[in-house]
Image 1 (cartoon, rainbow, N blue to C red):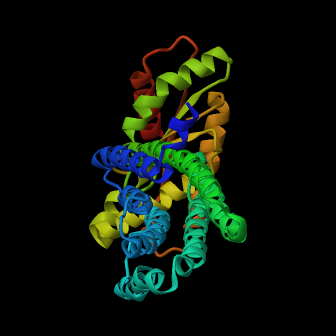
Image 2: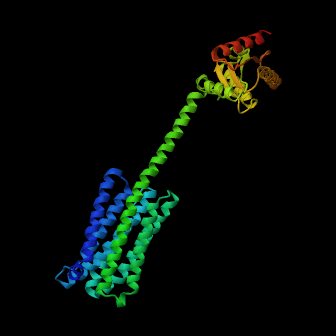
Image 3: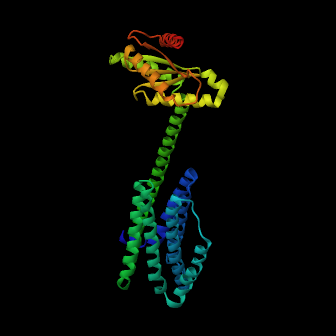
Length: 381
């Protein structure tokens, strides 16, 4: 049992396991099509090749030394793949050509130096650079928390930093490191890499749910904006008749339930046709905007102001008819006073008509007609 366990090559085992993880991430990329997942796949594949290349199966000593140096180089490149993944999640990935060219002399060193200077030329520099790239990748994934709170990013970042620490620990104990120690280090790293793989799967799932939440929020905002556009008069900013039809039944039921009085105030702009005929339709539109703004400013927030059509407005007030009449009269006087210094045709003002919505009344359209008739009576007077 122990002989079988000791015969297992940790490097080869790790390489095969990493290729399987890369395959799973490839399937995830087919579904998600995200650049950071492709960078993950690249990092896993290159790191797997690094482990497989470091597996002792070369008959020539020089070939084994060169393969070891190249495996160290590939491990560094694999760590850079994880660094790029963190950058690609936050923004569009841009790989600078000079950065790629900078890897050429590094490759030459790790490929040739071990042949001339033995394995030590690639051991400490390789593990230090691997530790640096993995630590940078871990911190890069930690930084994603500022953009989106994802547990997966924490798991990936923590495991990558831990792997970086294990490489530093291996360099620190290089003088006393045995083959068994190196194999144990490899198995530890393999376990931590599996944690990284789980974190990446979790991170991809959280990214998908985060995207769904953002999409739903945008759809809800668009729905509210569309609803506002549909129920709001474009010229005056008042609510329109469509919105009146939506809320009147609810308001009547609420006022009946809590025994709150409800009244309708119908308002018409006097001599509005003269404004259009003498000053033009643009002046008429400005006058309607002014009337709408005046009404909205001078009624309570609990009351509704609707543009009924043309130069007619309707106010839904939470009060008795006598109080509604008093408030409407005050609005007439205040609006007339606001026009005293304006160069406008004489007789411009507001005509009003009020009616209370009785507790048993269900025909609101009939009540609106009553308020309209009383408004015309006020206009003739």
